[in-house]
Length: 305
Ligand code: NAD
Image (cartoon, rainbow, N blue to C red; front, top):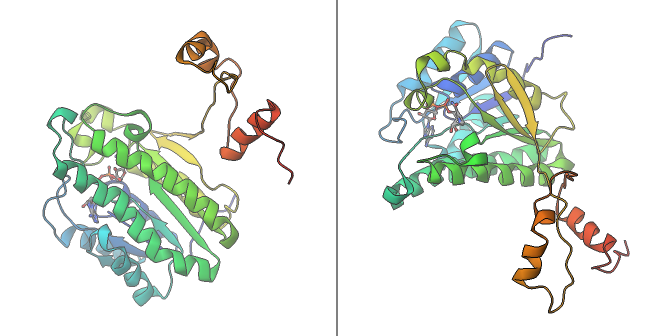
């Protein structure tokens, strides 16, 4: 199998001064892409700024013979980041929304600032960058997006109510972009990575982190954003430490109750085993599956279409 190349394409990676973002940039730079290395250069808690983080990565790509430019804007200023791609390379093909910060604190002690900063970077920032890239993607009928979720978003994690909420938002965001983008050959997927970085250094010991090199997340991202991927969109992927796996929603058997005065709390309790019976699950893809289920049970008139 020949190696995946990205010659002539432009990739924007946000939060690319270290960790996963840097690993993406070095890879795409070595595979022929023009790379926009975005990083605000602040602390992992979102304080301060510096141009150094992005500059170091650009320098490394150029030294190895690749093409890269730096951008130092916050992801909240997505237009400026995408403009950097257009001004320097004339196009944007791939957007990797990767920038992130942590404001870990127990929910009891969480402040509005902890909540808002996390939302600004992870939700608003990803939105602003995708929103700025979208018209280009539509016009050229080509675009690839990776958004970044987290196990904390999928499962929750102590001290991360703000981060969990923001990270799970990326799942719904991605699934909608995948649906709206399909007609324009815009493919969007979301990853829940695990990798050694300054972020995970705050929560995992070094002897564990050495098994989670950021470079081991990169190949999946490359597969998903390559032009040869024309079908895998709206997927949720867990990736890290040499493991790659797709996630999906699972629905229990569920209870079907009469929709009349007998639909009481007691009636639901009497069917509780069915409500949570996963022995024969189904795997819905959207509300249409739920409507079909209600039609089959003759709880709704059959859809005439
Ligand atoms: P990291 O701290 O090394 O990288 C994040 C980068 O984002 C930093 O370089 C930082 O300067 C930059 N950044 C922060 N705010 C920014 C802003 N407003 N605008 C532009 N850049 C900004 O951490 P990482 O582990 O490489 O994380 C990358 C992404 O992966 C994050 O979204 C993180 O939440 C997510 N993630 C990482 C892990 C993991 O195990 N490392 C797990 C789950 C999710």
